[in-house]
Image (cartoon, rainbow, N blue to C red; front, top):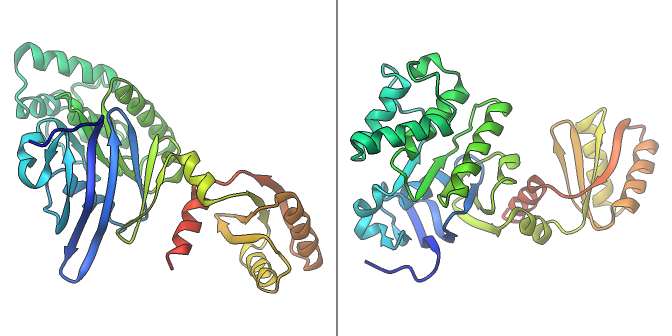
Length: 319
């Protein structure tokens, strides 16, 4: 066994996965300390799930390795699996069993018995706020409650690390917020959480992030560090009445040198973001330009950059 000389519970070194001529994960390296909520961020198909499955020892890497809880996943994957919890994107519990029966089944599969099983069952029902729903089947629960049940099954054996693969996909905003409050509680007890997501607002809740894009790790750091490093300056934000036409006007002006000191100009839903080093001056220039072009807008303001601004700028740099 390789000893872990630091407090890192996951150390990923040059992890690579190829499927024929296609490289799904390309030499990813990361270090994740104990008790941290680490967010692995990227669009669908970026390589998040493939990386996670390799770290879990479920998929052999083509190159590189990961040291998880001091064990090399290439040689000792079975040794560490009992110390890991995993919640997949798809709900995998048994719909014909009740909440309590599902939790008991998963507890026993990890070797829990008698008083220990009862103690952990009570803990999970309490922390996931599932008391009173013990006799419901998963089909009788909403998406948010099924999510809590799946997380409960992943933590019933007191794992050192929990791997969550886009656990809040398709769940309403209130349920997502409640789920994250539950994650904070679990993390505060010292459990490390490795979570994949493509939601930028969720990424803000993580202590550290890794941005992956087409299999390559393109940025790491805290949300604040990533924004400060990759989106210097600020953002002019406003809501145009005709978004596509207004975007075209601004990009044409930028190409013609009328909007100096700006970089990305992008749509954010119904809004437009303009990245700049001088928000107040550029705001005035944009106001004059849109008035001249008779492009109506509302809510023009200068705001700090978001993670989505950083991600768009980072991905644009890869093209």
